[in-house]
Length: 310
Image 1 (cartoon, rainbow, N blue to C red):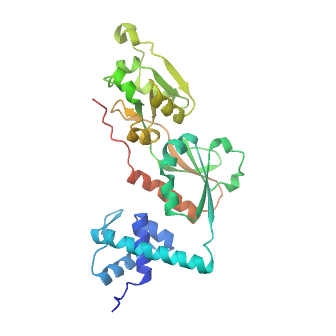
Image 2 (spheres, rainbow, N blue to C red):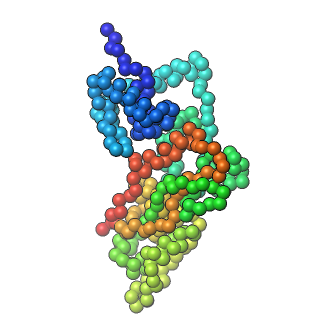
């Protein structure tokens, strides 16, 4: 005898909440209120006689039973989607155009972007860098992400990512020079300066160190590059240390290409902002999905633990 299945709307709410990690996000995707999604989840749990989610103030986590049930529900929805597309044609595809700065794209966004595509396969995503600023009309750009103070004429800016900077270098640099023990040690090392972040080194090295205090290495060589991606790649391949936003070094440090040289968190007077031209309509569902995905990345892949090598 076939078991009575939970109502389909409740299963849909379960799958969306589990995939997005948030009742609020699931409500936006399903065009429902959060309270309506919560009621559907409770109805499903009552029907099954188990708890599927652990509810917290701002998030939900699957229970062991929820994790076990999710693949079955997801596979059923996937089968229905395939069968529906086969009979009635594929769902309409939607394009989303996002403009970002090249360092943000190459060092942080690209290593994670496959996850967004897997979660939203029907969104045709275009990611543009500043070098294509004139190639696409402004009205075709749905979202823009910039690093700065938050004030750009003609745009509304919402804070997306707070940032701080870290000192990184290659493992070879660490082997040759050892860990940093103080400002004097930094003065003795070859360093990379990034245009636009000149004040960062000034905060780490607040004053020139006299030759008699710093020793023979006081005049260590420096090089100036125009992007953080160039600085991180140069540091990973050579002997210079770099001071860059932690977000841009995160993947390289976790992969072993770079190491943290110091446990100092260097404040930045800049952050990443989400920009929209003034007077533009509200975000499309595709744009909202992308923004929610961006925010979740810092939860799923948090900043580096600032523990310098010994």
